[in-house]
Length: 113
Image (cartoon, rainbow, N blue to C red):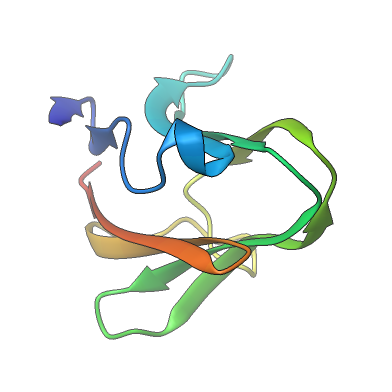
């Protein structure tokens, strides 16, 4: 399910299911300064390798948000709509690729300021 909020597409309950030891949810919010922020919530049912990478429409890596082994638990990642160099991203289509162990999700983000 996707809903346009502000400048980013909101995507909820996608890909990996809870019964597969993971819950994954993406939300678009604004931080305390009023700036758009992309928040990703996920839970890990058992110690696993996790990665979350943002790519542009041409497949170039924009930013790595998570990379490493995570213990069982709930996690939250905030993406401030900046690239790996700390520069604001431009309007356009982006993709996030979330991996948890052997499972993965790839979804599109449409960003318009």
